[in-house]
Length: 120
Length: 106
Image 1 (cartoon, rainbow over the protein chains, first blue to last red):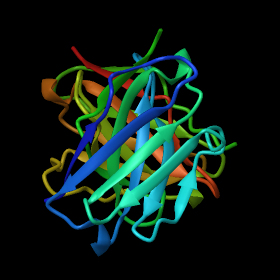
Image 2 (image 1 turned 180 degrees about the horizontal axis):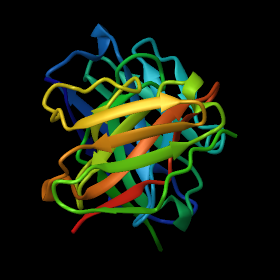
Image 3 (image 1 turned 180 degrees about the vertical axis):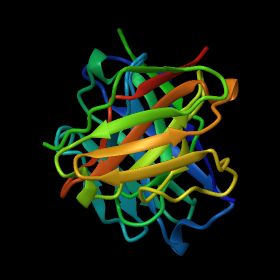
């Protein structure tokens, strides 16, 4: 079955770029589905960041669109997230997930999540 | 932008029925999905397309969606069901989550 695992630095300085990678196993990204990033600030709710299709077509949350880039590397069966000009408000657990139908249908499964702290 | 509203908390006694609501403008015209998130864990899908239960999710979990309210119902609630629950839908440009409901089984 599909499994996802996030990786990347756990600490990022303010104004710098947050970069995370999601490695997919048990399924080829080129076979279908959409792939998404979702985040959860400590003690708060979930926020969709964006989704990407195997072709590279992307969909972004309008509130983050100016700072976010999601890309896919089919040769490595990975997709990635970059968030520029980060502030403390970007401190969150970042999850990657499989999107089962269109770019924003249901998310299943999710990775285990990785905490990214923005601090100097 | 589209918003989904959930009660912050719901309490239920073991064996009783818990209902968690998710309100939004004409949400009945959209598909709603529900996730369970236990403490320190990733969210897990428990209902998709309003009423469908993924494999491995107990039959005591059910969903409905009509008008301005979607509802997740847990029948015969067990202590293991204690968790945060989130509803989700999408509008034309965004996947939207509700604020989450903490279910306490006491």
